[in-house]
Image 1 (cartoon, rainbow, N blue to C red):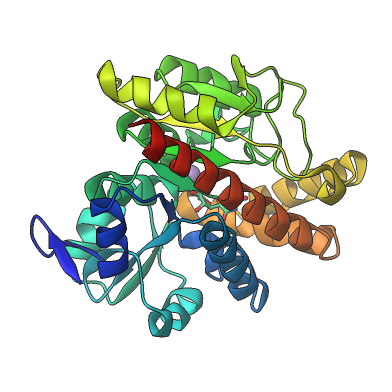
Image 2 (image 1 turned 90 degrees about the vertical axis):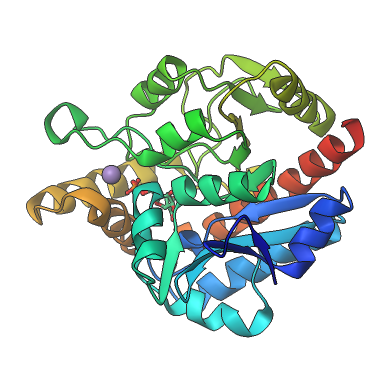
Amino acid sequence: MSDVDNDSVVVSEEVSDALADGKPVVALESTIFSSLGLPAPDNGEAYRRCIGAIRDGGGVPALTTILDGHGRVGIVDDELERVLACSRKVASRELPVAIGLRWEAGVTTVSASLALAAVAGIKVFATGGIGGVHRDSEISSDISADLDALARYPVGCVSAGAKAFLDLARTLEYLETKGVPVVGLGTDHFPAFYTRSSGLDVPVRVDSAEEAAAILVAGDSVGHRGGVLFAVPIPEADALDEARLDAALDGALRDASTAGLTGPAVTPFVLGRIMEATEGRSIPANLALAENNARVGVAIAAAYAGQR
Ligand code: PSU
Ligand code: MN
């Protein structure tokens, strides 16, 4: 392992060698692979498929997480079980807490992962779906830290949009306010995670990894301070039926409100209820879109490495 700056963030040897050699590297979050994101054994399966897609694309995966009081970028195989079993959520605001107080383990959300990727100098990050503006945010004030992290860290984030339990129109509005480019990859519409379209337009469409990478390269050269959100629809064959899903989402949100949950507990609770309400159909869809995003991520990272 080699250190970045100090030993707060430890970048694995494989990842730091790849970065030094200008090879494509794709950062991943760890919450999606923990019990907060997917039930076992699907979480391990999701991880293996994402890693496989990145390696098949000629890249190096960099899982971000917290272990033994360090922010970690890249793990070795025998550390994986600790990550999969962890349920201590680390968003960007918990990064200083987890490292400063030497938490034994923590799983990073999109916001914390973007922060760690930026520290390590990784330009591309892939996940399933980002957090966003919650439907009741005018009452709860619940807006995911993922959105501010996208505005802050100079990393391209590949996601299948965000789940429709969020207010996607206001999520897009917030990203515009914060100056985050939202780019549909092969689509004119912002995807809604399990379904290919939310019905909302994306402001920009590209049709290749090369074009996506060109936006990142240009961002570097004009001093664009934050990241870019690349929105990739779930593959057609894996998409869920929209009507059935809407019923599941409404039930999940009602249950969350009855349970009186707030803060970081909301999203994992709603995810769990959606899984139950779709009788598990959401899981293969989730794995397929995460793998697809990892595949797109490595293509963008490779194009970025080539253009720089
Ligand atoms: N959306 C999903 N699956 C997930 C998450 C979101 O479909 O696992 C996780 C991600 O780690 C994301 C986090 O960054 O939830 C957002 O949580 P919150 O809404 O508390 O910001
Ligand atoms: Mn929240």
